[in-house]
Image (cartoon, rainbow, N blue to C red; front, side):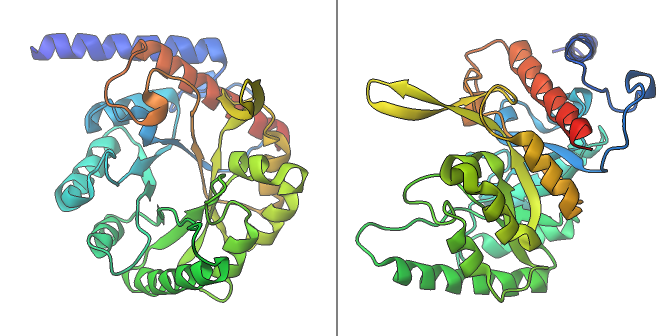
Length: 323
């Protein structure tokens, strides 16, 4: 492709994104005139989970994320991610530098790390720490059906203890995301609190996911939140609703603000807590494969970006209302 044609295409994308943000009420970064008069809001870092943009290369990723109005990227550094673990030494610096050209930060990465002794663990964490990335998200632990819960918890505690020590030595903090699911460790949240007890908060904590906490906790999610409040470094926001199907009631993901996740009350609790970290926006509803991290879309890319932009606009509106 000629350089002139590439510039023309990028200019067209900028104009499209500018238009969709204006239509949805979102703020363009670096454009004070688009902000208008708004209440004082917390200085949180708004990130997009890069799983939904794995169809973009690093330079275009930074450009698109910046134009959409995000401050940062929760970058996938895991098998099938934006950065493959076996290429982390070369590709993670490339990715951080490329998105940085657009003024976008990488305050956290999402990994599949669960044990300090696993191949690739140290290499990923050393590289991320060396680039000044303060946080990473761990992979998931599960409860095998053929083992006692207490036995599994003891093994998880051992792994977390080892990771906390490695994190301390490498100066990077690991966070575990609570994820809904019958076999997922951390879905109930009490088990995550128990496993983290006594480990240094500075190096190990929680990426609190309000969607998953609502699925599993129902009306009890505020209590679960408070139980982990002193461990929360980063948070995830997304939405869902229950749908009746021939096979019973099932969870159906949906755009932010269209489901049953109490995003407003959750944001109010974050404000009360004095939360000062990053918010990772997830878009798990049907988006032509972008919701699953596909590298080829079956939906027009402009519609995907429009949906993400609307979710960000909704999130920022809810933050203003909570403030």
